[in-house]
Amino acid sequence: MIRLPKIIYLKSLVIGTIISISCNTIQESASLGSYSIMVPQQQQKIVQKSPNPDEGKAVFLKYCMPCHQKDGSGVPSMFPPVRKSDWVNGDKKKIISVILNGLEGEINVNGEIYSQVMPKQDYLSNKQIAQVLSYLRLNLGNKSDSVTVKEVITIRKK
Image (cartoon, rainbow, N blue to C red):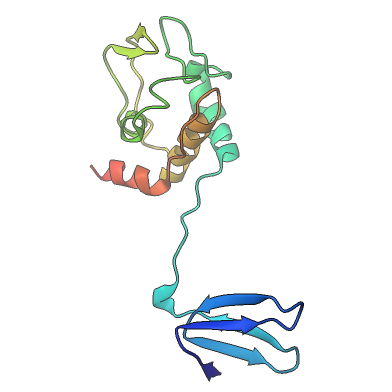
């Protein structure tokens, strides 16, 4: 192993490409002339993947579709739409809380009043809730960002 400064520049043997690397250690493989980079543990970042909306669709079809309908249009005067919904596109914390705690009483969705009880769905895993909400927020005429598992965990703890 060769110790190198924090920032180094390597010139590739193929087509002279220059790459910049921020690390402490580099290992050279003499037989191939290639390099493998050893990044110190404390510099590694874990990237949180957004939930897969396709998996969210399966959760929606299994648990939400009976009331909100396959196309997300809901049932007039009974169950609110999740298609082009101000609630779905609104505050993530609010919609996560609705799934975890249920909802009772009158609500206004897209200018219409609904008063059916939505039972809590807290038996769903944090991942399933993130998946279904991400599916809803990215599909059915909604245009909002995904919900992460971390966001669901934060609301569930409250």
